[in-house]
Image 1 (cartoon, helix red, strand yellow):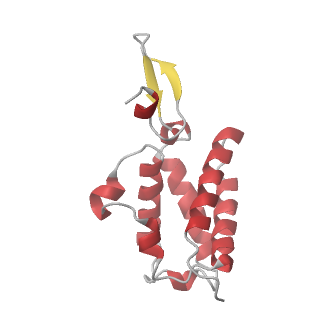
Image 2 (cartoon, rainbow, N blue to C red):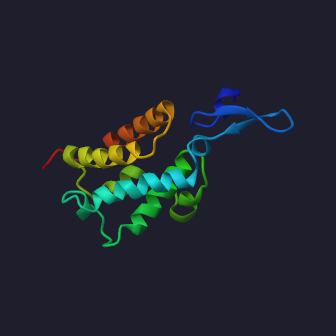
Length: 148
């Protein structure tokens, strides 16, 4: 493998340690770690809770377990702890969402709630654009029907 193939998938910046050696800093750390992803997910589910299309897609009356799963997934994806996979195995996003009717309306509602949540974080423009790009791609990839 080349050196480039060994680098993490998320963008990283180098910083010097107290000993002068370069240390990788994950996107997760750059944006503030768990606290940032918890705020994002809390705001997202605040919108979902009142959405007549989205709320029925969550089988639990309490959105807390879904919020914890999404927080863990995002943490892991962006370079934080691997708790999601330790508890639930491989993410398999398409497989986990196949039981739900994810049509363009549901996708757009999901993105609307996520956009509103992301706007509350006040991330740097680069971090905001990086996260939003991923969220858009993920949402589009989960559409599994065009039926209303």
